[in-house]
Length: 175
Picture 1 (tube, rainbow, N blue to C red):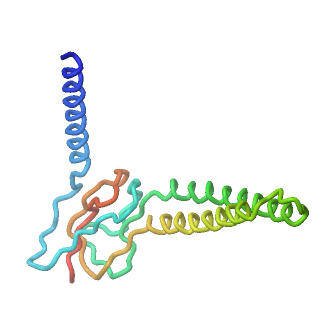
Picture 2 (picture 1 turned 135 degrees about the vertical axis):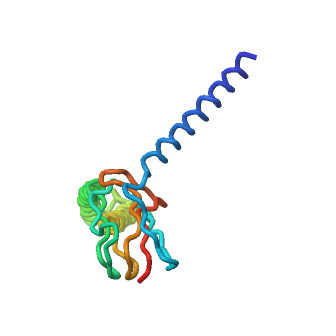
């Protein structure tokens, strides 16, 4: 019976924590300004697609007219830039390992390095190169551009607030 009470207590505690986190998330998403009216025109909600980070600056103010591909928001790229540096260091290390394994393989006839080990080292280098490309894509996504011409009719978050995948950041009404 004691174990059932403990399980119930843990479940209730987790539920309260979840509700508290949801309330905290909702309170941080308060719009900094009252939305403008859209006069019956179509409105697009601009959402963050993949990144999590902090808003550094809104480049398009409430009520401003924007053109397609204008920069409208900048997110903090620092964590992604740091990851690029980490993965570049890993790439350099894996290149050295691969080159060493090639030299050992060529200089030794007794199979000190197997073909499988050579392939593993080679594909580690390929994987590192792909990861660096992905990291750089994340850095590029920290600059959010307007998808079409329009007017900014609502700004959802404050500068410095955290945003994540699927969070709405602003509304743009088509011109």
